Amino acid sequence: MKPENEAAVQFPSLSANEAFARQLAAAFAAQMDPTLEELGDLKTAVSEAVTNAIVHAYPDSIGPVSLRLRRLPGNVLEITVKDRGRGIPDVAKAREPMFTTGGAERSGMGFTIMESFMNSFSLRSAPGKGTMVRMRKKLTGRGEGSCKP
Amino acid sequence: MQYTSLLQDKRLTILLSGEIDHHAARETMEAITAKIDVYLPRRCVLDFGGVSFMDSSGIAIVIHTLRAMEELEGELWLANIPPQPMKVLRAAGIEKLVRLGAERSPA
Ligand SMILES: Nc1ncnc2c1ncn2[C@@H]1O[C@H](COP(=O)(O)OP(=O)(O)O)[C@@H](O)[C@H]1O
Ligand SMILES: [Mg+2]
Image (cartoon, rainbow over all chains, first blue to last red; front, top):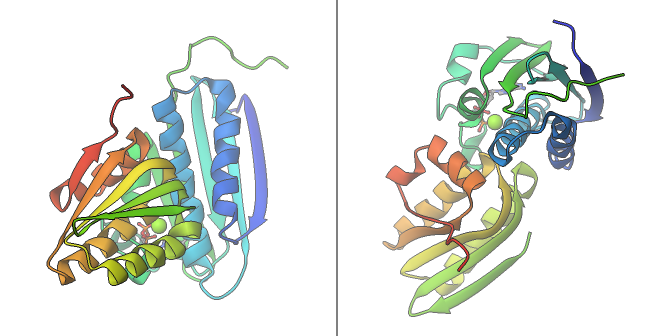
């Protein structure tokens, strides 16, 4: 599917970039005229995905995290978050509510929230190579306003 | 993140504000635990009125605070929760564990 607009950034896995990433997603989505609730959902999903890359992908080091935003036909926003960290050995297990390897500071609800706040969600991971999360959400918008070059 | 707290009749209210994410979580958790350890309240109220964003890191904070209050045989209430944090808390089924109060509509 050819995007009508897109943006991509890469940043190091520093926790200060959690806020940066969700604000960037919100700024990109603004042109799609989301409702306040949709904007909250997007920011939450981005925060979860990027936090996972920061906390779990590189537990003892700093590594690259990439965020790509694409506006697809039908006012659909696609968010892709990728890292080149340690990967997930059992993806089905990781997606279960309350499952966490992060101890008392984590809730194990990140994937559950991404899945329920977005319309589609896919997770791919290879141990030792990295993880990719791709999510899409159709925004209500006003229908018109496709981007003109 | 700033924390103001009020103590009245063994009831400790902690006002949370700003964005609660992983970046802010440890500090918030420590600040809450420190106040509970000092005041030994019978009831702790976390007031979310000033929270502009919260992700699942906030769930861990709530559960951690709940454990601390259970140790004192006290109770935890959550108050003034704006819609976005409320949606995150509900996604985790927190309403089954703790009493939740939605944001007061402005008078
Ligand atoms: N990008 C990632 N790289 C490596 N492991 C991950 C990644 N994302 C998630 N995980 C694993 O999946 C588990 C569940 O993630 P999540 O549902 O977000 O809960 P939490 O972050 O609270 O642990 C994590 O505890 C971790 O073991
Ligand atoms: Mg997570």
